[in-house]
Image 1: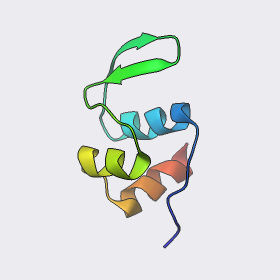
Image 2 (image 1 turned 180 degrees about the horizontal axis):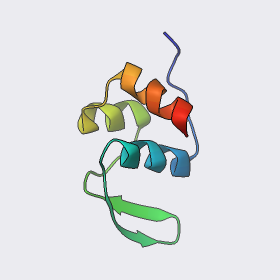
Image 3 (image 1 turned 120 degrees about the vertical axis):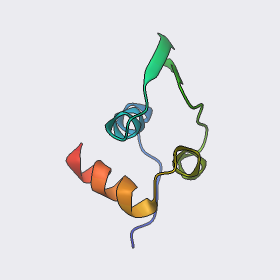
Length: 61
């Protein structure tokens, strides 16, 4: 299974939106989503997205 590595924040937002997260506000490059995220692994756990689902969504973007 591939490692989860750092990606651009915009790509992460697209992955989270693809799984149903909604952007509720934006100021510059700061985004507020229904769930607040700091680290990718924690983001995925918080959002209930498995590693496999993350990589499936990453391939589509």
